[in-house]
Length: 552
Picture 1 (cartoon, rainbow, N blue to C red):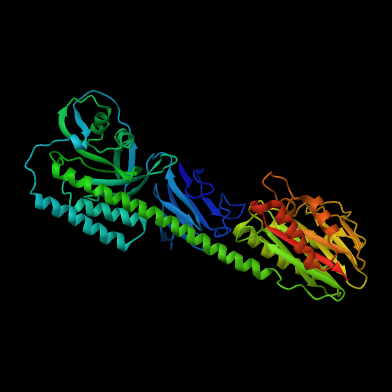
Picture 2 (picture 1 turned 180 degrees about the horizontal axis):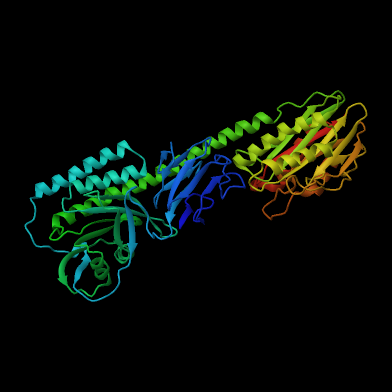
């Protein structure tokens, strides 16, 4: 049965088992939901037909990649293939194949052999293996090593694709190892310990499946030293030898791939032909080859991380530009009123948003909100909210109706279970009357001209994307000269000091009481000064947005 295994964070290690065709994408209706912003709603499909699986791109924006190559047409999958959908990386595996593919035409199958009687090969540490036969000329031995190192260097400069890289390295290794009939490399996951094939070669090219001894590989991993065998017909009484014999391996050498003291994988070369054992020079060469291959694996891993980082940084930069383009930079000039805003995202891309804009009636729309999701996905939803907000306010200037329309948007276009809190208010500059509706957001704080301050008497509603219909209680308040209204996100109220005490509404109210100025910028600066003094070097952990309205 086919299995998809997540290789990338945050779902690394999660498995999805399927028996029918499945859709991969960002949409909640997909069989395999990948909420990354780089993934299209319906990105790719794995179709199952005639006991075979095919990978198909569904016209995605960022393309689908198979083993590092852009997918141009439906392509059959084999166990061990790497599928990249946006920034999400998955591995395709067949449940009845405990091992993964080396090349697209060969499968590495790791299994334990049955334990029964019979002549066993001798399996010992490579360093202790002494074989008979005339040693090669020292100059020839050095030439073979140098030839491999030269060709390996050429390979490393030509490709960074993992499959191509390690298939090519094995090809070069076998070119200087005439006794080797097969070779493969397994990468070991440092956390799970699982092995994954990243390269496999056979000299004939005709073998579809390459068997490998789990017992032998486990012994190499445990002992962190090479093990080799030669078919000498001896009863060694060693369980590794038993496993090797049942795989009909006449000669095998299995080596740990180490970077400093860290095991990154295993390499094995073997043959199944009579009288084709490895010479001492072959084994000496193998020991020299293992080092460069281990370094190449580390190089490949670091390159992959750099690519992932570059993709993430590109996405974040795009989201940041997108987000900033939807946030107004300059408040409108309203005679008799002051309006100021402070927007400070905790990360490069924040979840807060705000807006202020004139309406057809001559009134002013004011909005503040907080998207539960951060990063690229939160920025994209925020951008849609701010664009629809203005369109909704053009159709109806009733704040509750506007929030109801935004609620439908969140339900329709949110694939990741995010929700949004928001306040939307409409100001009549002539009368000073404010109509306000609340969708699960912090209630506005008002300070009267006589110094009294507190939360606006308004029942909190439900957040956008939580319920249908939306519960968005509305209230009104008429501003008098000298009055002030503050809209804020929880980045201010939940700002904490080293004792994990929160700044909270009470400190906001007390700070506003002490501030005598009716200048909105001074009010915001005073609040920020008080909050920074409170948290100290602990800093702000969340996005912080303040929107202040005063009447002169």
